[in-house]
Length: 113
Image (cartoon, rainbow, N blue to C red; front, side):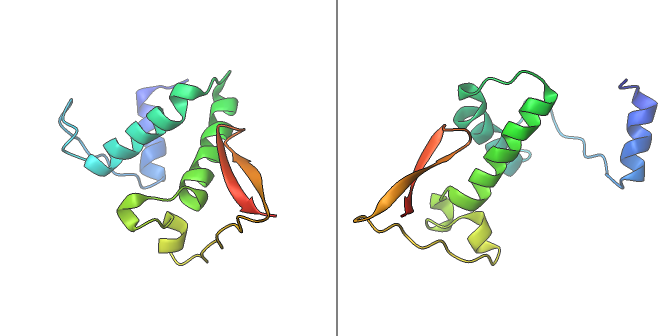
């Protein structure tokens, strides 16, 4: 299924370049290492998955949560979607709100009622 020459041919067709890094050196690509660590710590360590389709759907839900709803302290409390030009979500009115779940109930956020 995963024969090396077919894998290399598919990557060549998709115009994906190979980038070799030094093993066990997280400082070579810190942003990728940080994203992988965040995904593992905040999501995969708390979630069970049964097959590759289930894992892909759960990772897709986490990607949407991470980019659209989760605020990031490094970008001053904004989401990556807002930094990319998306509209800012209005803060919830504390007198009338409901709870909105993300990632199949792993995260609960207040939302305007």
